[in-house]
Length: 110
Length: 113
Image (tube, rainbow over all chains, first blue to last red; front, top):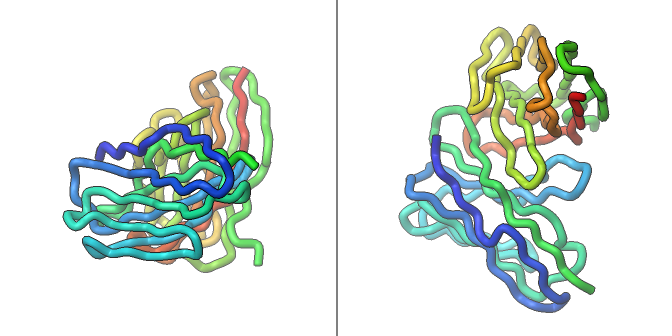
């Protein structure tokens, strides 16, 4: 079982601030996904990264896959209350399974 | 489009009872997954299936069973419910196992008392 660590566990910031959350492991992955989950709902896929060093942008969200494909970061610019939720990273290693981290619970204060 | 549909949404069981959590997808996806999510935790993989007639264990399979007789359905069975199985259960599907996005249902909240 791969050890996948997400940090911070909890983050509460004011609307308009910037933030970065992280997903780290000592293992190399073939792909990594970021999901957002709201209370009472299932996770919703935000992005998939597959190439070391890859950067993808989704409006105010910027995702980066580490050069060695062991870690990833999610940066949110000018956070809004609608960004509140549980952010989960998930990894795959070509074995038909996708393993999730414990998540970062983000709360944006209006 | 319905996507991934889970039933029931909520259920309370007594210790030792059994039940089946239903999951159906209408996207013709080959891969289907069952996860459980405990409070403050991420998702842990229980079982998965890469196609009809094929199932395999995930991280936490003990106490559960699955079957995959059709592409659309992937039920999860609890034979002898235990308090440790109190959790929120999510079913997901994807066209293939890697890279492809996973589509999740809205979950079944199960309490064992």
